[in-house]
Amino acid sequence: MTAAYTNLVGAGWATNGAPLLPGGGVIPLSTQYWFVCNRTGANGSDGNEGTADMPFATIDFAIGKCTANAGDTIVVMQGHAETLSAASAITCDVAGINII
Image (tube, rainbow, N blue to C red):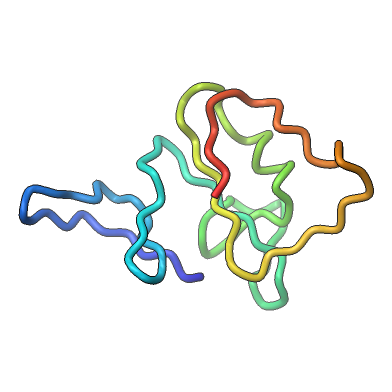
């Protein structure tokens, strides 16, 4: 997925900079977006900035970057896959976040 950002205004609506999904879907408005993708060619690394161009490699790391109850959104990009050894491998321990 290549995220596109826009500030289009027209016909009474505005995306206010929210990333657009293929097919016209819109990711919820958020104060902060974090992107995750470890597929080959995506250059995912937990040392990255967490942007669409430099995504994190793991969902758990992205959760740790979120601010509680601030409406942060984690976007799991197309092709991302994680091997989890147990159901507790990802701990959603930050309140009020979106994982898409």
